Image 1 (cartoon, rainbow, N blue to C red):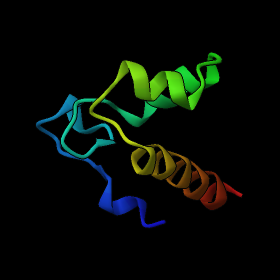
Image 2 (image 1 turned 180 degrees about the vertical axis):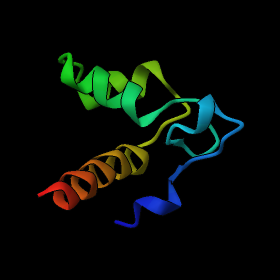
Image 3 (image 1 turned 45 degrees about the vertical axis):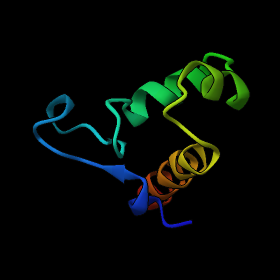
Image 4 (image 1 turned 60 degrees about the horizontal axis):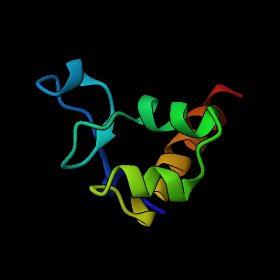
Length: 70
């Protein structure tokens, strides 16, 4: 999964926080929902601008960040 196809950072959008391309949904926001017990289905139902590959990109992005820290 190449998360770079789905996640972008633009200083003009949410002060440069990484977001799902074409949305104002930050990776931090999505991970926060998942960390608070939301299922992927709940995230997709509540944010119809997202799709399954976008959520997979969030996981891949998070993995890469953690992998780089270790």
